[in-house]
Length: 308
Ligand code: FO1
Ligand code: CA
Image (cartoon, rainbow, N blue to C red; front, side):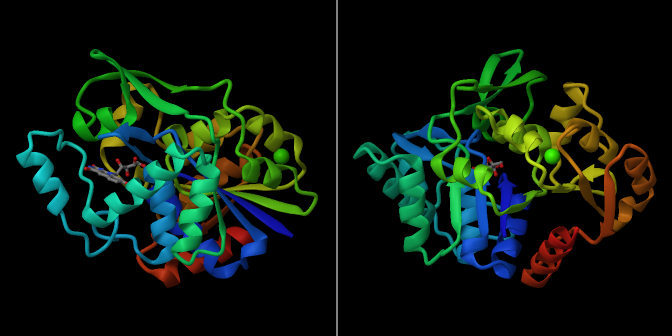
């Protein structure tokens, strides 16, 4: 039987690594959000694919939450000295990834092909697939107009008031071949939505042509691991964005957001009181510790999600 995981960056990548630790490569496909991708300094940067890749390769920086561990910043210092844009921090080792990806994309490979090539080169046997090979760009409408996600999140630090989110390129972006194949597998046993932001990291995946309909049509259970702990998003500034968009941050709101799709929500023990309301709404709940500090935490949570 096969498991399809849907993942965004940081939090999602940790659970994806846990799933990869407990499932053999032929039993897992990890489909990753590419809405945060952007072109910067002539390079294609894919933060969520890289977060999942670095987590599975054991190269992720757990303190910063993004990029490569033991990173150095010499290239950034030179860019700054040259007067080039320095608002987005590209570490020297991370930069190697963006150069390799951009080089192969420019030579005509698809993002799927490049991702397979680069993950394999780092010793990853599991399939990490982009949600789509067509560019999809998450954009936030602010008083300054529509901003690409990294401009809004990193350059502007989420300061401008937000009034809408869109996924430019959808409709019209087909699932990548690996994602489409996983969605259609006869032996698909479950879909696991990793603990990434539902509105910013999972919604773009669901916005890819036919994905929502394919998931709803399949009789396989859909299990989400809540990104909330103590009723709050683990990472701060996005709570501001969701508030401005009129979204309540709660497990009930997450279940309502995934209505028609979700069968089961894994919630943190600090939110145990939410379980009753979820069950009354037709979503079963498992209560456990969802904070992942080390490999043991990731594997344990992966097992809990799979047994759900
Ligand atoms: N986040 C920041 O807050 N500042 C940065 O300078 C930054 C650089 C960066 C470089 C590569 C990469 O893969 C991620 C990076 N991130 C940075 C994180 C990124 O903006 C977010 O983690 C994701 O897009 C949200 O899922
Ligand atoms: Ca279903």
